[in-house]
Image 1 (cartoon, rainbow, N blue to C red):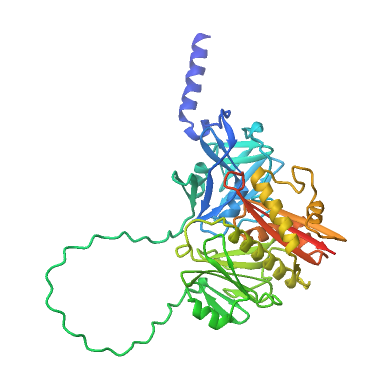
Image 2 (image 1 turned 30 degrees about the vertical axis):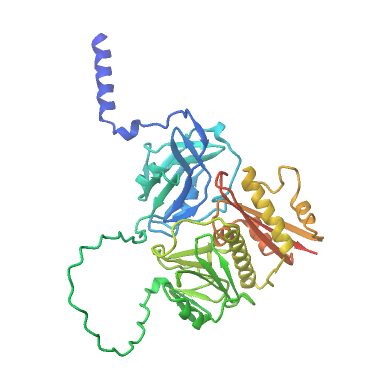
Length: 459
């Protein structure tokens, strides 16, 4: 009997030693769980997302990262099988938003436990990923995901920022100044013959992926301000942008040729259009067959309308200013951009654009800043005031009223797209109210940093 037991133990030991190390790994019981105070950038752009610091490492929701990387070479699809309690991830596939991405929530750190769900990456079961269930949602260790899914994770201690960079991301080039060599003795300068004035150099031709056609005119990243205004005319408005550049607004009268151009150092670094008038790589608004992903384009689709293309953003990451700005001017600029994107969306659906309400914008701004300063995310203020009570405090008398709120979106276009892909928010954007005001708030120490509110009403 003793020999049989010894043989059984020896066999078990051999089996365990032959198993891959990953198969023996398990997510440990957490010792310390707090809302992470660190910032996040994705391909050089400040982004907000709910995150926790667990035992010294950052953990994010899988769908938040899938959404943030959806227009990059590191994109991945996420699936869920309730019958088998399985999360599946497929790299290189298009991600389909579910409307809950980048949404803020209460601090649920006390509920953190190791997740019991099965994780598949490209069909292979992975037990080497640390995953915690917090408040009913899975949070993955950021560095684990970077290794498993093919994006780079770094940390900038100076700014306390987690840095995510996708495959193919091109960092802005930097030039290191070189010391001047010793200047040798030069001969006396000779007069230089006068030269005929040279013709200005033509602008370099942008690749097709960096061009956007709006109203039959083609605009390109890298074009100068002079070329832009020669094509589009003088802008309807200029606005400060959270990205550190300046928005030029065109076609906001009837939104049938609507265009946003972001300029930095006299050149176009981003282009945005929504509504009916744009075409990108042969795909017009309303298309469901989209061009392949590239490093310039972010294609916005509407999952509540068959996945149609409803807006496009082109960005030259190498030319854009580093880091975001949160000045009052930039927060207001992004709020007005959000208003214009919403109106272009309404016109696409055959509805009249909203009229801007400064009173509703102030009610929205105050609520957004209050959420940022007091670190909460709710329609009702912590003092118990409802959206309509806050609007009435600004002198608004209404017969119909609605409100949308968002958190974690660092610009007005991204917040707009999040609302489009959430059925209830989308319904407000396409609703029967006549006036709209939008306002944003920011606090670096809050969970989501960036907050935005839309207040709708009919007098």
